Amino acid sequence: MSKKSNVWQFFYKASETVATCCLCNRNYSRKGRGTTCLRNHLKSKHQDEFLTLEDVKFAVKREINGNPNTALLELNLHEPDSDPLESEDSLVRARCDEKLALMLLNQSFAFIEGEGFINFVKVLQPRYVIRSKSYYENLLCHDIYRRMHAHVKQQLDLLDSFSLSTSLWWEGANSEGLLSLSCSAISRDFQSHRFTLRCEALNYDCPSRLACCIRDLIPGMAIEVPKERVHCIIRDEPTALPGSLPDCSVHRLQMCVRFALQSNEVLQNLSSKCKQIVDHFAHDQTAHDHLKFIQEIHLKQEARSILPVVPLEWNATFQMMASVFRMKDALTLYSEEYNLVQIYPDEWTDIDLCNKVMQPCEEIIKIWSYTSTSASSVIPLVAALRDSLRTDVHNYVSSVTICSFARKLLEELDMKFSHITSDIKYLIATYLDPRYKQAFFTEREEHLVANEVMQLLLATVQGDGNGQPALKIIKVSSSSSSLKMNESKIDSILDNILTAGSPANIQQTATTAFGSQSQIKNLLYLYNSEPRIDRNMDPLLWWKANIKYSSMYGIVRRFLSAPAASASGERLFRESAHLYSDMRAGLSPVSASKILLLKSNYTSDSKENNV
Image (tube, rainbow, N blue to C red):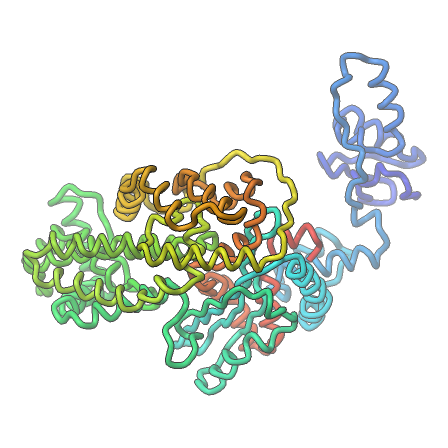
């Protein structure tokens, strides 16, 4: 039987005399009839597919030209993907091998040895033979990894500048972890890019070896990174230089919260009480059922469960206390009837106020954790949190415990974020963000930024200045935040700060800081005079649309590329638990690291580039 006809992309050979349609599973006898019946079936039942056949496209064109009613019909005449049964056996196996190998990015290698999967493949494609685990490991870690490596290197070569970030996620209970190095950048078309340059799968608990891995993380990269194009390196707490605080804003704020909580003995005792309550219901199903009975029958409430403690979460203590507080009435009734630790009225008040103090911290950490959040948000959000804590100290003076906690948190915030008012990467990033500009600067900081930007522009080679069509400013999707605007304390504070100054004051500041003696000064004066955009708008789209500032594009892409926080490997680690099982079963850490790197970079872009 000849298989040259394109009709076979829609049929497969069920037997020597029977062909089955892949679209509707209908069988056709072919004994002595060629492919005419198959073509007729497509023409009558699947017209769109019939029009894609190469040998009918000219006839279709003639039919369209002769019929004015079909003049607007659009045809897709591109060659479709070849069907496995239409290809040579070697090509079929190669395609199947690669697809199966890529599936192992999300599945354990043991999966392909399961009887159910093997039987499924036999039915789907009897000619395909599943290879050994080592074969697919080699395919992933050599051929596919090589293509991904080339793709990432190509992306890196196209970038003028970029920022690096290091992170370590460690699960001490299993002595397993993930060390990663990520790159953040803004391309010339003002698209934000983020990809991983290196992953290290860890499965040991030797501190000295871990220290060596962190030390060699950047020098040990397979891809050469030009130092002159690296804007900054953001390190999280575990990968920070010895004796220094982390560059990651998320980890700095978490440290502030941790130290403030440790210094408050009353909150520590309250936390212990809540922990006893959570453990009581976690280990006693009868108690859990009775608590549910109290909620539904006595209080006429929807039954809720007390959430278990997640010790690896930075705010696990506060989440636990919030979970207990939501069931205050039911727990009070339960404790009166059973021997359960009691929480007194003033303690319930402290738990409630503590959650209110913590709500802005949790919100800010969520915002900083988004991959799209740049360093430009650090100064504004720290200022908003500082105002929130000052208000809490004033409003909650009736509670000595909460007032003390808020004051200590404010002291830690001022101490651990004191660097942002002198660190030029945060100052200039904030200034170059059209949502903020100089709204959070003192007069000293305004002059510091003005002089530094002037020097950078004078030292910068003339920018690309390529004309770009003006784009309409599009608001960022509100789904990126778990809190609605009218429920956000931080949003309210930021709006008040940004609307406090009148346009006249902004104009006067611009004149004082820059003057208009040169072309660069005039350009900065013009930028300062522009009204700030809404906080929900994308600053990169604003810059792309305002071509008149093209000479500033180089420093804009450089400073706005710096992320607010290091790229956390927590999600990748959680989604790759199967790889650590494979490591315990014999998969080498080197192979696991390469597979993790593939998984972290395997996005829609890499798929389009066959990576």
